[in-house]
Amino acid sequence: MDAAPILIRVARVLRETALEAVMIGNAAAALQGAPVTTVDVDFLFRKTPANLRKLKKVARALDAMILRPYYPASDLYRLMAEDQALQLDFMAAIHGMRSYNSVKNRAISVDVGGETFLVASLPDIIASKRAANRPRDRAVIDVLTTTLEKQENVAPREAQGTETGK
Image 1 (tube, rainbow, N blue to C red):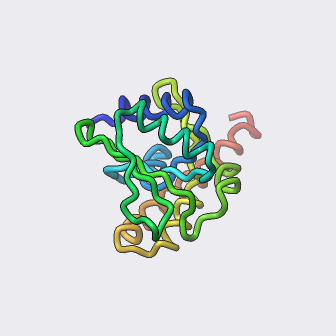
Image 2 (cartoon, one colour):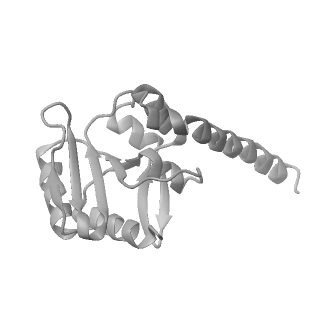
Image 3 (cartoon, rainbow, N blue to C red):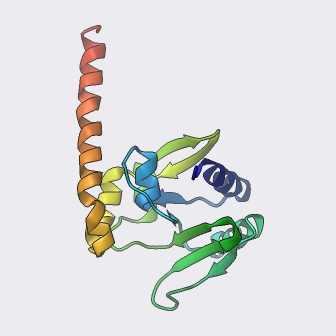
């Protein structure tokens, strides 16, 4: 299944509703080249009254329901549209992740079909997986770390090539 049409639609709705959110988790890692899969897309956002209103607009635009599966234990807002196989998790805080602003400042922009997502940096994603320490998170840490190392090794070579005129 190609996730691009769903991601394009989600990015468009986030833009149209002006809900600022940073994609985190395996979906964010996959957009950065990590060979991981997921059935949901996770986002970090600031939990404010205005953003909660925007989140309701996002749910309406996507024909999704907002669920609070772990209430009152967490600030997870799950948007579900089962007929579309859509699950979006919006979290106000992630154990082991920096503040929203810090994650946002380190995030990169990723284009998907002409729409843009803010995507958490691989170091932030790895830190959150380590902090969560769940079996499913531990299972991908090596893959994410290898992806990050490959990216870091490519960047210095590219810089050397431009410095030497190659």
